[in-house]
Amino acid sequence: MPESTTIKDIARAAQVAPSTVSRALHTDPRISEETTALICRLAQEMGYTPSLAARHLVTQQTNTIGLVISCISDPFASDVAIGVEQAAISHGYSVLLISSYRDAKREEQAVQSLYERRTDGIIVTGSQIDEGYLARQDRAPQPIVLINCPRYPHSISSDNLAGARDAVAHLVQLGHRRIAYIANPGSHQANLDRATGYKDILTHHELPLDDDLVVEGDGTVAGGKQAALRLLALARPPTAVFCFNDLTAIGTLSALCETGLRVPTDCSVIGFDDLELAAYSCPPLTTVRQDRGQLGQHAMSMLHRLIEGCGDVKPEILPAKLVVRGTTGPAPMAAGSRKEVNQE
Image (cartoon, rainbow, N blue to C red):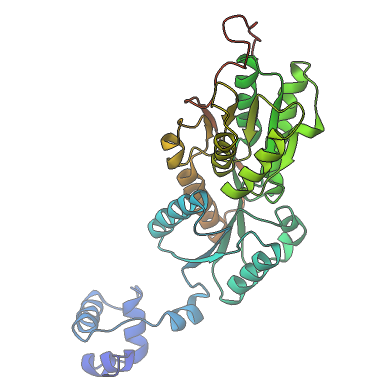
């Protein structure tokens, strides 16, 4: 394999010093336009490729950012990653992707690995340690942006609280009084906000907060199904289920089908995310839409500002919107005679 062309090779061909070649390739104004044009032409003809390692030594930047996601097979995470990469390319960065597989220790190891690789900054979504970053923010060697952790000062989040309130209020308006929530404690802040929105609406309409109706899933289809089966085994099962995310909701639909219950006639279901598959479930899933691509793009734009040293960077909250489809309907025995409850 032939040796690659170096700055010294170009310097010999141009009959200038290697330092002149280096400055010309970085468009240094001290080098004349004629010399710069000659050196750039020779570099192209000789197949010169800049050394990223050498550039890093000079600029102290790698033009690479790290992205830690829960799992590449998670459609939410993959959509966010696409948004991050699109924005990263526009800012001249490459993206180094690592999955934590929803494990806090692996997430910490991933972030440490990205520190050691001297990435210019890091984005984390689906964090299992969430607010743990608050304690270390002043010691972090590179800036970090979190997705869906609004208490962190450098974060991009959907309005999880408002989205959950809209979802549960929709169920109350349909006449439902026993409304369950399938949680995901592994996503601490997002889960806390959605659980708070759920409780807010029940309290507002003077509906009881029944601990039996709040069960834990893990954000996956399988976890959603198992949690839903526990709810359906109750002596008084719910007539509606609000789910932490769409994957949990798909699992819930599977559990309802398995037990012979009809959706939404016997039980209504609402998800959160509005993944592409939500519109193609059977029936199509009512859900809360958060724009995953926008989350990724905004996170990358915020990280770029931090890398560039912008001091005025504040948390951002993006809107979430209820999308009503076929998995929600009037509560059983309430159709045609139910009393509407006003939503505020």
